[in-house]
Length: 475
Ligand code: NAD
Image: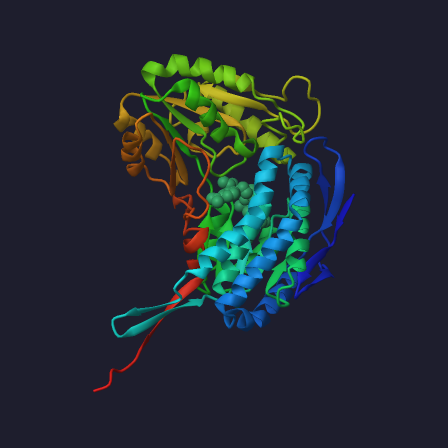
């Protein structure tokens, strides 16, 4: 049993002052696996004060010192890779391959950032002026429950590279993963207060971070609704905000694509991370003349997807993370049926043979119109909406007809044609004939999928501000 009753503040694990206790429940069995005591506003204030004391140390650090901190973080997190993977499976229900990927990424992002930092120009000449990129100040890093280790580590890597001390608030619904990562961060031996981590409610600890005058910058990943609250909360003190938010990504299969080859990839993009992925390609756009063939291929591919024990390497879809998630997905499946979509695979309830755990049936809907709720709203579970189109212009119009614009996918046997379509899509990222991201490139959304970019150079620059120093020229 896990017992997590401490926060990490000023370089030490300390008992939290908050008193709210939450039970941690295994999503695969429904059995309790631990308890967590949540921090409160006073804990958050202590963490912010510690980060404020550390800020001059971080801001004054040299490039070499920052690279050294990143390398130490990489080594400490790398040493915990197995534990991060295990916690992701146990607490979240992440399938083995995905959990491995996430836990490897947690250390990898420090290495990638260190490499990028080696060649970064902090100072540039512009006309008579010297323009110096300076750290923005103490950063609040707020993370969701669906990609805990990755979110924490990638935000922290950017903040350290820029010279910012951090107060990290992981989701109150992923305490195990947060605890393992925090132990690794502690082992990296950074200056006291450079990194502080506390688990607490969004409306309490999160709001304190989003409003406290000593916080200069918020880097938030989570839902669009919360992102708007955070942007509003930070307005009085004009905090810089980066918001990585919800998505409803479109996958465009062009009429020259090899359907048997690309549809399994498209299904994988829709159901990755048990469908609980901001970048999940949950609207699949198929040319009408090929719809019948596509539906049959999707029906077979969905039926072949193994749902079950996330530790089993053959499992494609594990349990959803919580009862709330399970109920949310059931609601959307019911709504899809009510609004006239056709069930191609899956449906309501648990898959056959499951009477416990938050397992759902991988679900594919055909005959979906883009104005149905299942096409407009982020479901955050393995539910795919298949939409027909006639001609490329209509495909692009449907893809862009969404409040969101995080990621899109294009499949075609002609690369240039796919690139031309990609250039017309309103999305922060477009993946062409692939579903794996390029992690050194900027990541983020347009429209209501967010503001700003994460990862690599752009991720670090989100924690920097240019200062212009212009000197009188002699004579
Ligand atoms: P959420 O918005 O409910 O919570 C995210 C974090 O914000 C949590 O730590 C929560 O405690 C905190 N929070 C809640 N209310 C707050 C407030 N008023 N002030 C400050 N903090 C507050 O999101 P979630 O359910 O944890 O995560 C799922 C969502 O995250 C999905 O919409 C998904 O698309 C999105 N997401 C986006 C990305 C991306 O990179 N764009 C990545 C992962 C997840």
